Image (cartoon, rainbow, N blue to C red; front, side):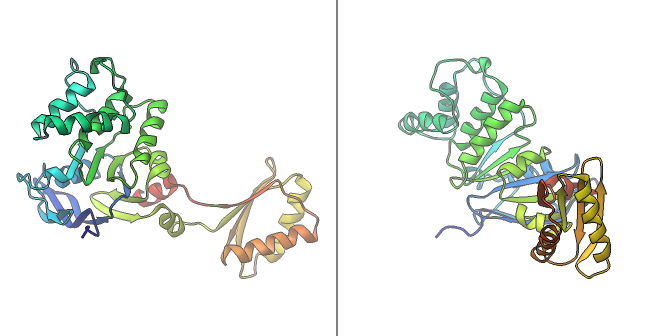
Amino acid sequence: MSSKYILEMNHIEKDFSGNKVLKDVSIKVKPGEIVALIGENGAGKTTTMKMILGLEEMTSGEILVNELPVVFGDNQTNHLTGYLPDVPEFYDYMSAQEYLRFCGEITGLSKKQLKEKVPEILSLVGLKLDKRKIKGYSRGMKQRLGIAQALLNDPKLLICDEPTSALDPSGRNDFLEMLANLRGRITILFSTHILGDVERICDYVGILDQGRLAVSGSLDELKHQYAKNQIEIEFSHEADLGVFTTKLTELRNEDILNDFTFDPSKNLLILSYKQDYEEVAALVFRLFESHQIFPNTIKKIDPSLETIFLEVVQ
């Protein structure tokens, strides 16, 4: 029977010399999810990951990986986790195949297992089977090799600490595509300060703020929670904007509308509302129809992860 959660963190606390860096952090991660842990520098992201790996001792609380407790200094959960640091180190004089075989032999894999596994994993992460030495690899290729090494022992959980921070835009794009292709094969937890990366591939987000897990949920849940109930309308003509704002002023005291702002130089209006979006949209379209107004665009404004993050940490 498979575990309901690959990772469980229950009421984690961490003190450094009397300074509490993690405060009652709890999170549960389901199999196959891609989860991001985000926060400002010093929020506790790296400390959290080190404790999951058993490399840092928690002050109190419990961490379970695939239902097994993580104990500082004990390696019983090591085979369940793979780890990619922000800047992985390699033996540059080796080829990728040589390096993976070397790592596999250290962890007890047989030569027969490695003969099958190494080409399979290199293909999975998009590295060719060639004899080029690692010293000739780009940073993006080294990150891919780091993922290959982390996957060598078929872990349940892959932990990546700031995996795209040292990559150029092209390398970041390729790396994110690779992580997305791993969705469902393995559970991924990664920290980052690049919020666009999170919006692109993550199923679930946790925001750490001053040692506390301030907010967590799926992107859709967070966007719904922090929605501002606003509609943006771009008009074709300034005259249409004038007519529309006049009618909205007449309706402002009704229980549907809240307020609006407009920019005549761009023929743009932001409408804030109190009721359901569908009800407000119906009212807006009735006004369009009755006054023969044909806007260029009309869209509901959803908060970005950046605006949510700034609201949480400020």
